[in-house]
Image (tube, rainbow, N blue to C red; front, side, top):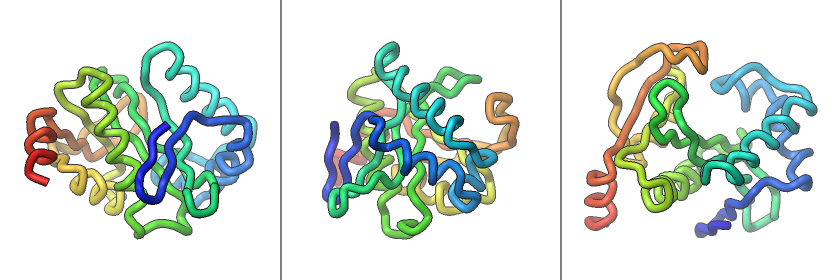
Length: 174
């Protein structure tokens, strides 16, 4: 479990099912991720990302708002299928967009990736038109590399990265 000023990031539990199912069925929330999902599909997704913590020391955490205890999204680290690079992912409920919570959650994922996954670099991808997510990546210190097609997403995506040495120097100068 990790804590920030406003968030708790922890393993998903059955108590998160209603919140995650509601988010994954919301067209506004899912518009840049994939088509909306049924409750059963959301449960399968939660099981998948939780299982990877047990087998590979990576996955997504539930992002919980300290103030209310509400599960408001997820963040974590994954392996980008095409390159096997360590990928940072994040998604926060639309009602809370614009408040810096995605950056706060993604910062935890990036720090975890460099400290616990022995990564030399981390990457993130977003649909090119998803300006808000791209801005989060830039706030993490990531640099835009290119737009390219990713078969695992079946999309052309904006591809960002940051090397560990760049991350370390950013933290040292903060």
